[in-house]
View (spheres, one colour):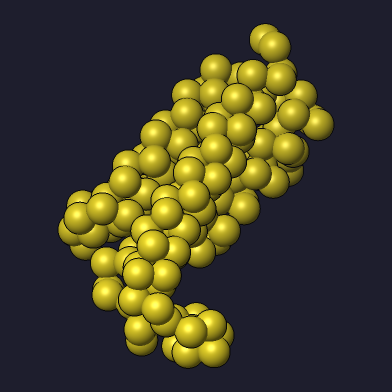
Length: 140
């Protein structure tokens, strides 16, 4: 098996993070400029969130979330590549993880239905922990 195939879902998740980042600024900057909000009034995340409508915080909350558990995914994929343990099961799991994280981001950045968002989060987390435990068992 081509071990480097594990890089594709990693890059896909990085691109998702980029898209969320761009979406966040595409929504926030026009609002801030349009409402002529001075920088000193939005100098901290708390001040910014107090000035913006709640739905303009959805994407920033999602961006923060993309730097939580996905960090473990990145590290695990690097370990899989370095140790040459990539197999079909890991590839399917990695792509499933990315698909569920994408669903989570789409839900959170748009309509933010908590039950749907949580389901996508929970399922993606279970996939990730499956990958981690499988790798840990193979190493010990």
